[in-house]
Image (cartoon, rainbow over all chains, first blue to last red; front, side):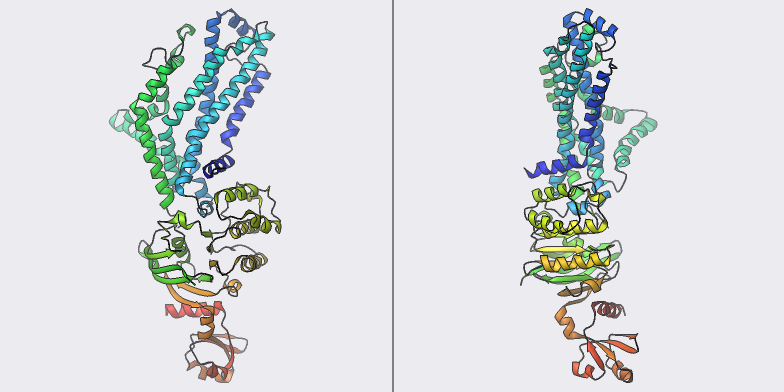
Length: 302
Length: 285
């Protein structure tokens, strides 16, 4: 196996939350489905199911897309939190327990180390989110079809290819876009992690939040706040607010009839053409280089 | 024999204090060098400089490389135990071996397994479940399985009981060391390593105060248990140290004629500990 993959493997050994957290979400979903406590759209009480059965088939599919996409978004949020804390701890935990002295006795460069940890946070975790979303969707589809057939409706509705494909597409879209969009956040957190003398969480969170509050109190404006929230959630905005029928429609629409066919290609084109995305990628590269530099040259033990 | 380490005018300052001050020494291959000094003398700083873990002034070459700039390359041939119990606590023994085997080109897995088979360490255990002695055994097993040219040990046995410490150095000497290898070791327990050392480097207040092979030490220095009637005569020969013990006065001489010393009492080889105390006191006087 390639060296780099071994470094990634070490991270997965150490940070079990990477796979335990999605496993817990899926297990909880299974329990909810088995005990009949799920109220995701059609899958719930007999009343919900009956209502669902009355909806025209085209709308049923769209409804299910929302359910499946919602599952993907829950999974993405959970793994987003996992990635956040992983990145904050990534270049600090081995300094805290001094095992950095062992890792540094191996012929592994600090560039490789930092890159492997970045790959885990920015690439591996989104991929796991994608896989976990798929499994979650299948769990709900299976549970939902049982529930529907208990109410005398065809369970196959849950397996409508358009619905499953819609949910899967949302999950895939999040995965491929998150990798680039969140890279600068991961880079920033890793730099804080490499640099913090102790308490990397505070070192990572206080400067941006402090600036935000300071600007609000002193100047009264919210540029910092806007900048931060946009970096956190702007991905969804880029994925289709300006684009009629883009993915953004999913979030905005209150009425089922608003949900048109998603214009995925348009969404992605808009996303990959935006300068914000590529500025973020450049920032990520700079922040990562800084993290490598700090990791390499800071004096560990004096 | 080639120079493995060359330090010329090596310096390191932390603010106004000079942890290393114009340090010069050479270490040749195939030696076991004890770097010995009181607390805060600069031992660890010197080792960190050698291992590329800290910046330094002056010139330093390890295996012909600049340890700070060429650290990554250096770690192919240099191995170190920087402190006891720095193995990651969360890892399992089997995972650790697997990882080192996969990332270190000079790691010989079967050698490591051989050393571990003689200990009580189970491969399924996590490092945090092992006793301190076991963690050290495990670290030593890993390090000895790496075919390195230079092994650096900084207080490798701190906090271990005497049986463990003895076993540690015996294994190192009998099963690891050979002419191709060089070991640089620092420790407080000088008595336990003096019989394995080939060279001594004493460091005090950031300066090298003694740099000699064991043969040179034995030639140059002599410990004499002076008979009571010769004490006054002995003092005229200017001993570098003097202490009382069991009805005899023990004096340490540097560069004195053996024949002359024989008349004053029983001549012996000074222990490294005695030599250390005498040299440090002499340097500070």
